[in-house]
Length: 170
Image (cartoon, rainbow, N blue to C red; front, side):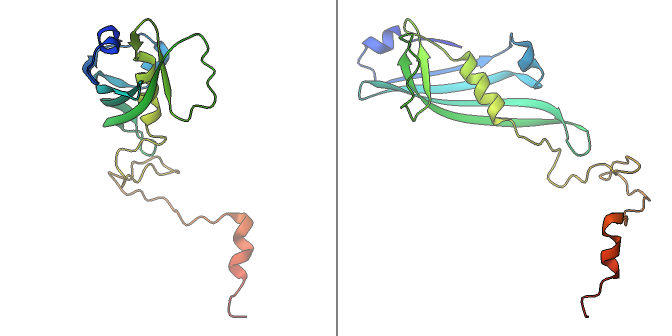
C-alpha cells in the first residue's frame, strides 16, 4: 500500500485520509498464516507541530486449526496502530524515540511491511474454535465436543500414589 505524500506535505491540509483493500501477498512466509483476502485498511495522517502522526485501522479474516480439537476455524480480526512518520535520512538509529516510527522515502509512504507486521502481531497465540472447546481425549482421540468417550480418566501419576495414603486428620 503506497501513499503519495507530495501534495499533503506542502499543503495547508492538516489531515490526509486513506483506505484500501489488499488483495494479495507476495511473501511465501506470510502465506502460511491463512489470511483470507481482501484485508481492509483505513487510516489518517495528521500534521501535528511539524510532525506527521499515522493512525491505522485494519480488518481481516484468517483460518487456522483449533489448538484443542483440530477443527478448521475462521475468525474475524482487527487491529489499530499509531506511529510517527519520519523522512528516511539513511540513519534509522533513533534510539531515544518512544513512539513507533515509520520511515518514508521521497514523499512516498510504503505501508505494506508495516501492515503485515500489525496483522501478524494481532493474531492470537492460541487458536480456539470457541472458549468452551473441550478438545480431544488424550487416550482415544475422540472429539469431546461431539461425544463423550468411555476412557478411564481417573489415572493418578504413580509418583504421587503414596500421597493418597496420607491422612490430613492425623
